[in-house]
Length: 287
Image 1: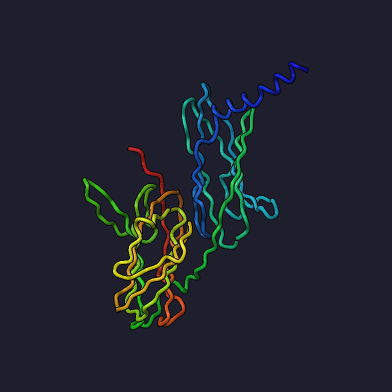
Image 2: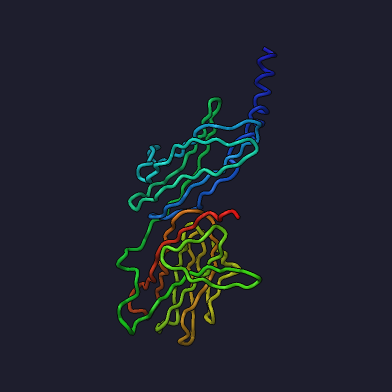
């Protein structure tokens, strides 16, 4: 009995030693995704042992209300992969998924790593945000005298101590760590008070505290969350609404760029939406 008790007491330490030898070092999962996004969900495995670590890794998506797999909805076609990691090495394993427009249930992801002798399991929440914009309503009113909204996204490139701006076209490709400058301008508006609702691509991260600029207009942030900014902009003159802020590309995949949504007391329509596209974020290539 004492012998069995000593074995049981030694198990926690043995398991901790095993976890430090092989396991998951980092994850790359956006804090939220939108319907239509195509993120690459990534996991970095590490092997600190003295022999190869070989097995299978299984990635699954689950409807948490029904506790049922929903991989078919997300086109999770590479959910099962083989891996071999050499001693003292690390390796990223990615799973491409496509967030469906028709699916809005609470969703979790599950990851299992199986070898001949053990199984590692971890899980987490996948935060889904609905896509709110119909394609036919993404451009300003056709009235030539009406307000015009322009939204531009640029990449900031610094070389030899100088920073230049590169205008991004539709479906542009940037790399993780790139700084993006978003500029929103509204002209021909007679409204003195405008409410702006601005959402950014799911694979990016804003830094509003240091980089938000309203260019001559007085402004007040009404709400700032992980996926959107609501701003009240005031002007006593006919000064155009002009706002800019910066984003950092953080996660790999294809992500929807939502339009800017603007409303005001004297605007001809309840909302005026700028055009939108998508953004491709990829890993930075090693030299």
